[in-house]
Structure formats: structure tokens, C-alpha cells
Image (cartoon, rainbow, N blue to C red; front, side, top):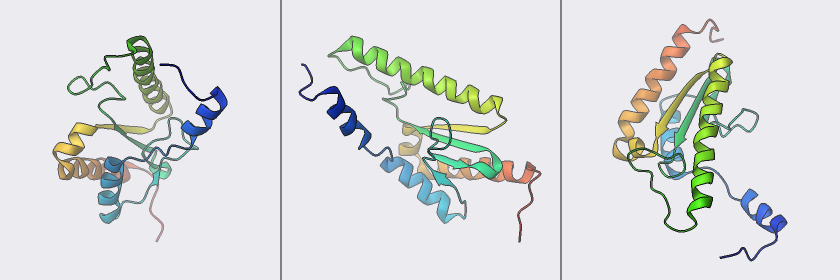
Length: 145
């Protein structure tokens, strides 16, 4: 099936789609309620992490099982296979590029799968909270009071 929009119109439509998911909101709300302060989807950072704390060089990504090809739950659409194979492969490659970029810059990166959040939100939030607290404690930057 061919697209009914021009390339420019399709691009405009796609740019208007917001990238914040319900899962992201659940995780970020829970972390915020525990006193963790962060930025969501910071466009100034490579790969636009879902949650980031520049002061401590923390980048957290919440990956959708479909879009990031989860080995357990990712599924391939049956129609238009060539398009979807390329699209999803590129997403996985981009994830690797983002991970490499942050590791080379000395950042602390954490990726969480959608199914982990859905199956046990509290466990994921506990792990992220501990991850952040551990980095804060090891960081030479002292909190100003």
C-alpha cells in the first residue's frame, strides 16, 4: 500500500508524534516521588535518553519490546517484511551506537525492557533508584546545601 501523503507531509506528521510512553511516565513518576530529580527525553543528549541526570552522567532508556527487538517478546510484522526488517535492525544498531557513545564519554547507562516494567514496576524502580544512588555516592561532585 503506497503512502497517501507527500514526503514532506508525512515527515511533518511524524515529527508531531510525542515520544513519551505510559511506561516511561510510570517509571519517572515513581522515581520522582522517591526524590530523584532528572530530565525526561533531553534533546540535547545523544539518543534522547528517557531519563537523564547530567550532573552524575546518568542515562536511562526504557526500551519497547517491539521497537528494540526484545529476544523474548519482540515480534516481526508479517506484511512489508523488507521495510520492517531494515527499520527494526536499524533501531538495534542505533541502540549499540548510543551505548558505545555514552560508555566512551564515561556515562552510566542503564536499559530497561518494557516487559520488565510491565511485569514488576516496583522492582524496576527499586533497581533504578539503587543504580542512581550508587552513582551519586561514588561521584566526586558534592551536593550543595
